[in-house]
Length: 479
Image (cartoon, rainbow, N blue to C red):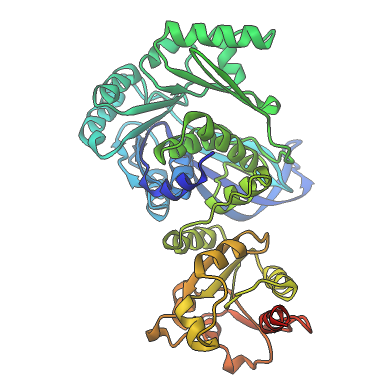
């Protein structure tokens, strides 16, 4: 697997077309049964709105740093406006078409103690006339993208999907489809379809044996003019099947919390990895890892490059390969984490030769919140601070070693002359919830402390492990 291609994620240009939805969550505690009917009473304490359906596919793609647009149908209502606002915050290029006669598809879930008690659906099926509006818009924006993902939830937005696929293929685009119809002929021309086992059986697939499964899958894609099928198989993992080969990928052994949206994560990750230039087999391998992460979360979840990096690190530990998020993308990832309500911790240092004291200190810093950002002095800054013979290890290598630690989520360099070799400007950009510094400092002496405190954050000073320092390691080596 060529992990260097993961540096190209932002080069992928993907358009998602399909049934967009607003997922609404009402959370609360249950302590009694209603006197009106034998149902629990939920005292609602928290509301949350998320992008659902095809919009969740687009969100997954955006979280993986690719350029993504979204084409779908919404009503002229409050739910449509909320969905547009969510998409804007996710850096998704919204191409949603408003229709006046039908509502935005919305699903409201009432959650108590991590259990879904009821789901309320507000929806009407869109007609071919509505789908024609999408087809017209697709023709206008097609040239801006290389990959087209069709996310079909059988809500009518893709009533004219056959014509849409024909249009996309005529323009030379790679087409991926998450299908719902058992009539696979509707998807003729697609490069990849991603049915689950239930959808595969409805389309005529056989699952009595691996041989029957492969043979029937090849028969289906051959008859319907489809190049390849990525069959998702729940606890059996997934299989990539084309006319000549079948590749099987075992399910990742993670505790399953919620399978909602796992298919969205699979097709989104597949599209992004193909867009980055990966071979299909490698792209599916990473999509399988992403699915394992997604099902361990509650609700329609997304997967970040950092999470994939860690999973890849475990998965490929024998190869010595590693993936590090490009510095330019980190600030956007931090913003996404803030939107999710995660607590951001910041610390900084040179970390020239990583030792036990560093590892313990970083673990203690991470324990203060959900995500740890490490500001890393660049090489020129270290030379000014430590002398001409430092750093021992260059910036890229120090960043790679730090990123491999489970306690570290992001690494960002700093230290230009106008920053006076301090992370103060970087801290102002990030505005962490908690600023941590190790050593014999007072709060007033810590760069960036004033900004953090002024914005309602906390500043903490941690002790270093006695006897551990980079200077002592270097001295011992010289001796």
